[in-house]
Length: 363
Ligand code: F6P
Image (cartoon, rainbow, N blue to C red; front, side):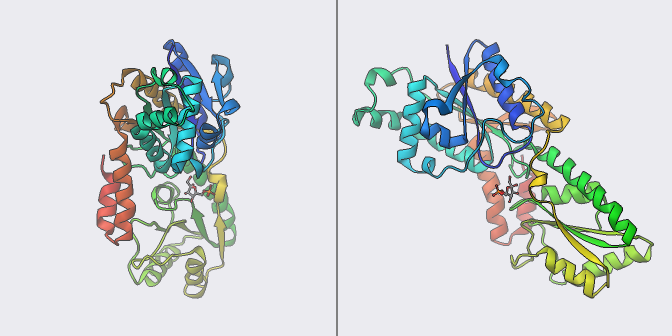
């Protein structure tokens, strides 16, 4: 029986549990044994009890739960070769040769690197006397399949990452709460949302909440952003609007890549427009909590597809990432998706914002 392991890695996202449940149950339904690796790559490096067989009922109740019930970590050891050697040894000892990883681009790149090194890692383990040639002989190839779990929706090659719609929903709900109090006092609120490198949450929250102004990293405002924002918000107020909402992505900056902070925005609203202004940082409220219906559906369909991808893989198939494009669940080459994602960050660093926006759209 083939043994397929599932792991969550990087920042947690609602829907990760749905993905774990789907991988476990689809593996069992297809006649394989399912394993969960606890605490991300940390668990893979530590081995032992951190890699547990999962039965059908072990994932009962997982579907809508927020966070990740099998834990996650940002593991430094795996990014060094001795850590990966230990991880390879643990997999052989457990009889696992397929790994489904739900995480962001960093976690998925690490996984593909592991795959590329795989036969070499095993040979080294034999040379060091840690495993025998007999032990490694059934483990010629390692299958890696990526599932993108991140609230930021920052991965190219997919329309939505697992978790982003739950997070967007939470932001909208929070802004609705703020709206009521802002309206009552005729106040302005500057709301900071997550997105270190990606403005999707801020942009979509702006659209969904009818914000007055937004700041996102991919499209910085002009040098005169203070005057422009004051002009637009002043106009909204003249039209009779009693409240003002400005949404600032965590990674927002100006054309020179200088950070635009909520405090800077507040200064303009207070000093130029004389608005009674408050700042709200939504923080990790955006990341925790139950998965919305979309994320339950997405994680289930993608988790099931990840198992199909494992079972259909040949040694020459590049590691896939399971995407959703125009409402279809599809497989894309993982490394290309990661490369495109990194190119967006590089374009932003090079101040080529047009290219950054274009790459965000790329399939
Ligand atoms: O999950 C991605 C993300 O939400 C980013 O938008 C944010 O900057 C980061 O996580 C914060 O993560 P942590 O608090 O775990 O470092």
